[in-house]
Length: 326
Image (cartoon, rainbow, N blue to C red; front, side, top):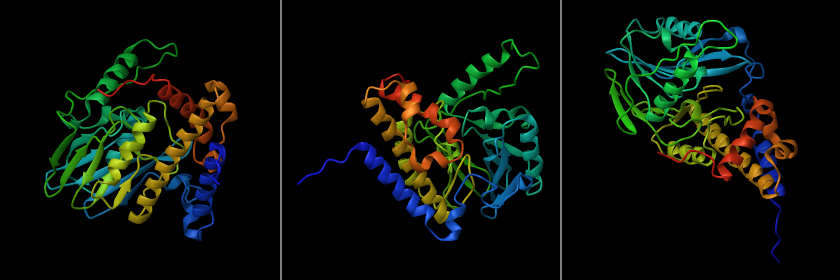
């Protein structure tokens, strides 16, 4: 006899399985969270540099309401490459000062992994003459943001400065030789933004994924492409890498980083499935937000803030309202 299991039950079972796998695991797994306090850290521990290899570092800075924004630093013989900045000129300047503690070489390259302000709003303090690498979709978004920033604000105050790189990548892949280290910049598809870039270090087997990977942070979909995001992660998992670095959340050791990336992919799948279930019931987005059941994901960082946005964005995708790929 064939038994049909309702979508709600399948979703709940999947979430319970995730809870069992990670919640009932040994003590070391209980620190798998984006919350620094739950990991036994203090906000005063940040910003901090995390050494990945002899010439590669992660940079974790705390932003409100208390989770990390991550940048990547690659030191070569010819200079320093940075992927993603921080959310203000002051925070980015602090990052530049911290980089000086690991290398006196000039910062010569900057990768726009995400075009969002929490990664780009401090770019005005980057060195003059720095070489930007940006996807065409992100450059187009930064042009729009620059125009908006220049418009008069009802709140007054100084206008925001949005740095627009002079040119975009000519293709979906670019290789940079920083002197002794080869850096591949990859566009693997739309995900958190329209122009997510990843940084692959083939020799070191590291893949910095920027905001395409949010470690234990509820999927943030304000400008996302939900189903495409899953496909982008699938491509990332096929890259020859052993350590995956997120744009938010904590930098993990190699084995854990892959496990957590797969966990984040599962979260995307489950979030989309739950919203599709509610849409199929004929509920409006507002009603779906009231009735949605996130299971264990309701305890992920920023769930209360990001969950309603995710519902509306998945509704837009279902109803064909998202911009088609260029």
